[in-house]
Length: 331
Image 1: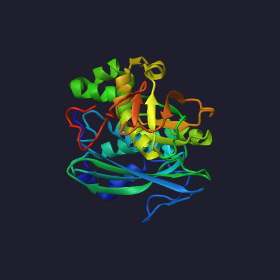
Image 2: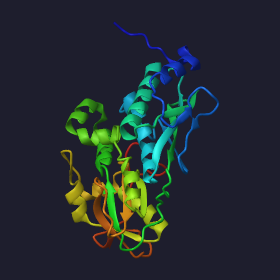
Image 3: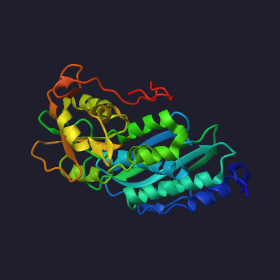
Image 4: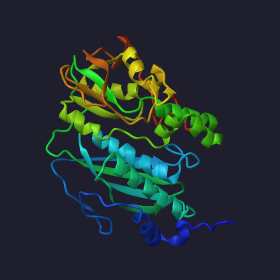
């Protein structure tokens, strides 16, 4: 028996919004939630704000992502940015635009994924508002808010020579997952069975959001979310701080060479994108929070050499949306 499809064009904005909102839990910090012209969020200390857009085609493919996975990833990538500042996520706004023939159930599943990611990765955070519109392809823009709660933000620019370099989260897995999807996306279920950790890291990442606050409290001197590849993002942190980051292949291999049954090379760790782990530097005598592991050291700056591997220059590589080809990711 074929089930009739119920599209957003047939439902109309009011009914689509009603169905989407039914899948969402309120944020603890929300004083006024969806329904008014603006949401009102209680802020305890300085407020941090970040925005990220994902467009069907260059950023995701619906033949790979379920609606739930896509909603999860939309939340996860923004929550990770808030955590990387040493802040606690408090709320998200979500703007969705889609073709008129999009099934309403897809948007409901996206909402369920958004809600589930908030509940697991940043308890108390939730969707507080947003917008619905039409577009030729599915497009989502998420704005995330967080509270510093009296702490100073941890910036990219605070690393100093003799600090240690540490990392928390998956490393290289998401890049492996993306490569496998491009190579064999005709067999998605088989890929998920053969490479479960890599596919999960790519389609529904679980960044260590709460460890951002733990790192700030432990005295992290600099920190950032790693979304475009460890070496590429490390180069950005190094440039902002005016230093060189020197990674140890031995430390990387020992900590991340085998992740949940998936073998990962040091090159894949350095160049794979979309892991959304936390890269941080700490004073040499700092006590690292559980979940962070030492992977290198901060050195005096070397001209045009922001990243080293075992003391030798390493050319930063990773994901660049303006350069990397949609059909074949450049690493």
